[in-house]
Length: 138
Image 1 (cartoon, helix red, strand yellow):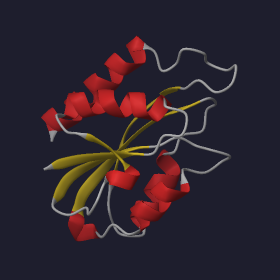
Image 2 (image 1 turned 90 degrees about the vertical axis):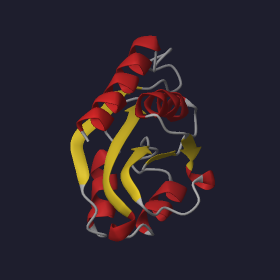
Image 3 (image 1 turned 135 degrees about the vertical axis):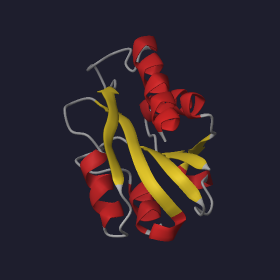
């Protein structure tokens, strides 16, 4: 069983989460509605960077996951700049001995005047295809 959780403040990561969920054949759950995590083969984690860090509620949630609950994690997200949430998520999950895939989906996200209209339809199609490939290759 696979699962997808995400944190989105401005809506960019939510758009990506819906596309990734479609490609993975799972529901997109905001971190506040994710419930317990157990028996998950692949956990898709959607996050963006806010003032240099991922969302605090997502950070806390990930910190409580145990190795036996998740086989591995895959990260996706958007950013106005070049910083990805993947490194921070990898660090948090490494403390629980949960492997995080080197395959990460990252695209531009709009913030104020930067990257208006992103993620766009092309980004969403790529996110969906990314998830489909992850699921198909197991």
